Image: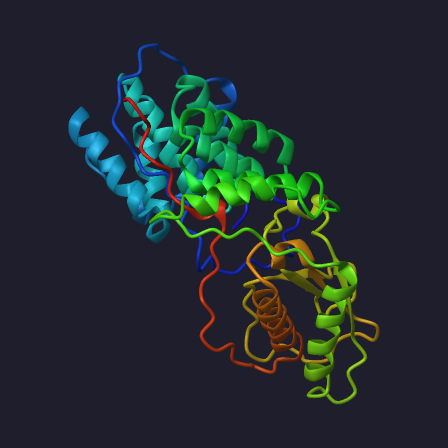
Amino acid sequence: MTGGNTTTSVIRGPHPSHHSGPGYAEHPIAREFELNDEVTEAAARWLDYVPSEHRHRPAESDKRTLETLQEHMRSCSEHPLRALWTAHRYLKEPSTSIRVASLVLASEALWWLEYFEDARIAAEAAVEADPKSAQARWRLAVALYRRGRFSDSAKCLDDLLGLVNRFGPAWALRGQVKVWLDPDNRDAGQSDFAAAAKLNSDSGTWVVPYRMEREDFTAKVAEEFRIHDSEVVGSSSAFEVEWLPETSRVENGLDPDTRWYLPATDSGPGASLFPLGGEWAAGTPSQLPIGTTFVLYQRNIENLSEDEETVRKEIRESVTEIFDRAYNLRARIANKAPEEHAETTDVPEDENR
């Protein structure tokens, strides 16, 4: 389910480790604001996204409304459609604080539903209404990141860290953004990753990525590739190592944190990519076109790894996942811990509110 996404053939899977709920803190907002035309138009779309069975929530008092929004933010990943309906109900409330909270919740729900551009619109409106809301800025930063607007996300994270400089996920995401902006530089974002690692808490555990030379990384991929390739008689596939996915693919909906991709078995005009986490239905053909090339993204694999041993483990699991999906091997990845990505965590309470 993707709003305004031109790559409808891209198959997305679940986000097993993604929990991007921003949290919520009640606070007064002095100035009034009105929803602009872009938000008004987007809100009409949001209503269309919600099936009728989710459209039930009685009106609440101001105090109860804020509590309701808070409850939805805590569990938004479990019921994003119902959360979006709730947020939509309160976008035109007289209370500015409620309307801002509704926009933040809408952005959170839209992110889970993979309407990333709409998530950006909602979060941007919340930031314009309350520039000092860390929650709104976090939602905007993660939406921009998923849209491939890395420079804009970096600016938003700079502003966010000026408000809450002890929020580890923001440091970690800024490190990831800097890697995107300078992928050839093995030191890009390292100071931000280090700052995040010092702030490990319930909001996440972050590492300072271990960087390898491309030749060493490729050699380790080749080793794992040979092991798995021997299991597939007559395989003619190959692999490549790239720093990161093409930005254009991210702009069209590919997860910027994906570790690999492989072409679909259909080699015609509609051929698509199966990103990390994509589910392949039983009975999928196991024969790939001659010359099929698997691609692994070195920086995204390294971003999860604090040492060489962990890099090798992530390479091994990535190659196993590729072959499992490419040849329908149904290989098991034992004890695979959910990945932690900075943009999938909660934000802190707004300070001094």
